[in-house]
Length: 320
Image (cartoon, rainbow, N blue to C red; front, side, top):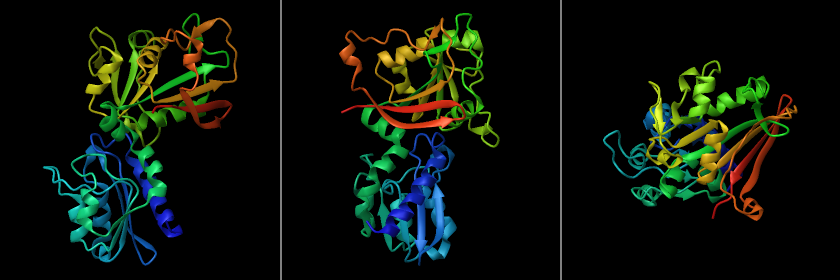
């Protein structure tokens, strides 16, 4: 991997992040086309999954694509879809001189065939893990048959999510809440429990300037009926039927505990405010642990940062 290859693939990975939560059922891919050390085309998967990143970059590059190098975060697709042509064919027809790929496509319809069809493709193994991270929802669907699930918890230092009266606005400050809205904008479906729905009547929309249109679908975890405009999830496992790649569970304690008990949480966002509540409603209930030893080794700290006066810790589930 040359320094230039790493640099341009880094740019493609950044572009891939722009589509997260918007491209279902397709992965969010980034593509950069470089000729003589200059970017002539760039693209990322568009809302709804089409056009693909490669098609967008080729449109921008035009005739300059001939002989250029394309950096793509996922192997270009090799199967023809009613929604558009195969990207491997598009790159070949444009005369791209070299294709650098971060990760092979796990979809059996393409797996290895896109690179083989191109004939001038190389895999940049040093960025494969980063590429997989940008497409973790797509990879989860293929590997586990369900979306990638993030659980958000906003607590006091002593683990409370509300006063015993139910008052919970606001535990965290404005910067932490803004970060939570950004997470909403990067997901396809947001879930709360029936108790939270009835007590708080949450809107669950994105209230960041310019991102309001990226508000996710809403679902309530209940065996009863959901309000108009909401989906019903009779159990945590029902997310397998949701046509999204990323799910965000926001509350309350019952829903959080249910998803943890079912071992369906892949990522944990723990926002902690520098306050003590004392007698409070806890963040979690029973999550099905029989022995304390079973709690260890399940979570890996992936990130930690300050958001104003609040601390955000991001944990990822350790799986085989």
